[in-house]
Amino acid sequence: MSAAKMTSLSGNELFCMSLKGLHPKGVVVGNSVHSMGVLGGLRSAFRGTIGGEVSAVSELIHNGRLSAFRRMVDESDKLGNCAVVGVSSQLRGLAGNAEFLFVGSAVEGGSGSGRFSSAGDAQELYCHMDAGYRPQQFVFGNIAYSVGLGGGLTGTLKTMMRGEIREFSDIFNATRHHALERLTGEAKEAGANSVVGVRTHISEFNGFHEMYMTGTAATNPHLMTQNNGTPVSSDLTGEELWAMTKLGYAPVKLLMSTAVYSLGIAGSFKAMLKGFAKGEISDLTTMVYDARESVFERLHSEAATLGAEEVIGLKTYIVELGSGMIEMIAIGTAVRKTSGVAVETPDLPVQAIIRDKDTWISGHAGFDLENP
Image 1 (tube, one colour):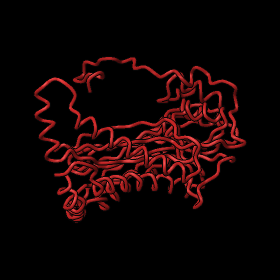
Image 2 (cartoon, rainbow, N blue to C red):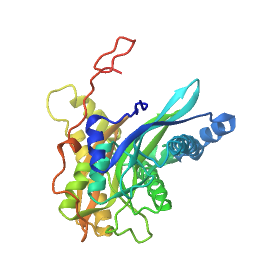
Image 3 (cartoon, rainbow, N blue to C red):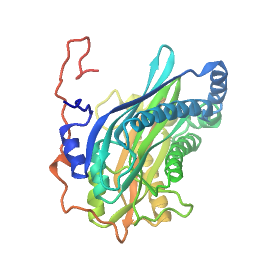
């Protein structure tokens, strides 16, 4: 009797992969534990007082992830001519150090598929493949950053006045775009012309913020890269990308814009007083409206420069920074009609759309899955 194959893929994911001729081979893991060390900590602390990227921390995290990723790929290579799908990564503390962990499901088969790795789940991968995007490699880009005093010396004075604090806006815009540039840079090195299924995570690390972007570098023969050969990028879900492909659209670029606004001393005081009474706090309403219009205007301008016809999947987020300040973030994917793009099947199977459900709802081993 042959040994049973282990996989982290769900029933719906296995069904989708089987439609593409791919079958489970095993679960693969790669990890790496790193320490910043005294020198790295000193450089980071110094850079944090200036504002912007904390390069020592960015490099540490990138190298840690790269080591763990390569070990996962090496493990899949030992299983034979395998691809790794549904790659996920974690960064967590371990005995005062940082552990980088990558987990994926090895699959084999598929005519012409060869070896590749992909982000997201296998359901999303099915949508990408059916829309003509041949997966090549899991890619990531990151940046560790701090607003710091450098961005804040002038900016802090401006917090006393109402309106946008461009010094802070510029720092946040620059850091977010650096992460995207590194993501597409990895895809370019891999010979891909697109990065699909981009997901963005922002978290804290050693007192700094890190923006971490992941996606699947892929090739579609009908896509046009940007003037400098930079691959197109998209944060559309797999189903959305498939649907837009069926309509004849292709992504151009993932667009991001950030604006930091302050109520100022007078505005904050007025808002505080109005908070004691029932009714609209007009100063806050106007500030949020102005911030939203500002980020929309920047996205519209960049889309026009790229020759995009639409910006879809537009999402806005508001982060309260304290002291009467907010950060408005807008994210969307610019698209345009592109000849030749098409889907392979007329309709998506329901297994590519149904979201998986947890079956172990509550445990009795000291944790509760509904309340981690």
